[in-house]
Image 1: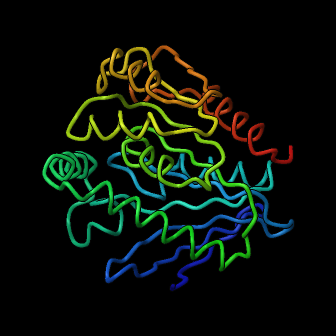
Image 2: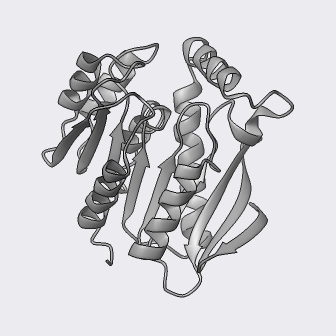
Length: 245
């Protein structure tokens, strides 16, 4: 485990890190409070073509830390962020590379789940968070690769998913994992999503076996998620994880 650059803003400390999992580097960021005890740990999965430094990821993490006493962690997705090495970070090329990996790399989902679980185990030790409640927040690619994590990791107590559907190279995997998901779940969809047909999103929500689940749909295209929707997802996690307000 190697800690990197640390930046503080308005009482929230963001620290980059990299850990080694069987020779595979897992880079990410942790956000925590400077002024209060660590609360629940929220894992944040970023979207396709983005990174752990996306504005909405950083803003979400800081709000959860500042307003709800949480600690947040995000790791880079495959072929994203610093995992790209010298390749171009043009969002169109990043998304193309991910689409190709999604279609050709049968181990990609399992590798990402293993990366998350390794980072989670290390961070629980590093930050002395054993016994803390755990949440997951991830839309689009954050659901494609995050829903399998939530299904596999019974320590996760609540999740926010969405902007995805039962479609694409791992459609069968998503349907199977959704059927084994038991924790409270909020599913977000954009009514005019140009990347995921509405019927596939409904199918994925329907496949989730949690008895405590909510569907939030709003007008707009894939990337046009409103501030109000973000607020609802934060409120959902705050309620289900009994976070401070």
